[in-house]
Length: 86
Image (cartoon, rainbow, N blue to C red; front, side, top):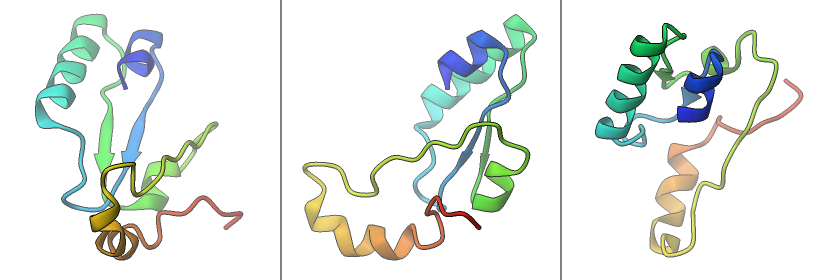
């Protein structure tokens, strides 16, 4: 997010409600974008909105090491957030 702001890129995060970026980090990135006059990073719970018009799409794992106990909950929450041809 910070790299995109510094490079002047439009950056959108698609994530289920409850899995948004840390608010302090997000607010810091927004302040940086405002200072630099670059597009503000966006956060949406609509995965299709997040990738609309994108040149690049990146995803991360849904369950990181140390979060194995949350795996079933995360699988349900992130359903529909897969990167597919459609």
